[in-house]
Image (cartoon, one colour):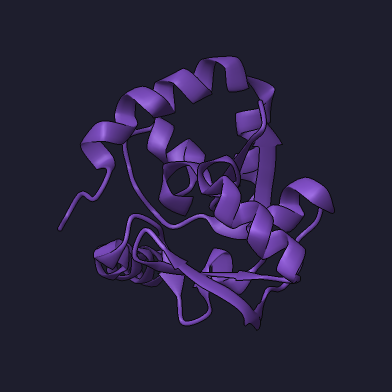
Length: 144
């Protein structure tokens, strides 16, 4: 079972590099509205009615207002590390993060593989953020 999960994650991570962000058929963050994480403090599904392309990926929003906020300052709202699991980046690996396992730290959105990884990250983010940022250049678009 673990081997199957790892293989699935690896296949997804290899095929997800057509843009700078992990995405699926619904777009980045599984089609969830990345602005809503900041404004609403929760995961809210985006709509194809409020969709745009940025950095080679599809981004969906729950409202026109959120779409406009993102288009004005996309780097503020986009998940760090291309939506990869932040803790895995800190440890030198790149796997897609789970949009349901997330945190905002220092006004930046981070995804994690699962809630326990988020909890580990939040125990020492001042150490792990710089560690992940140091690892990121070698992992960014790895496998292309």
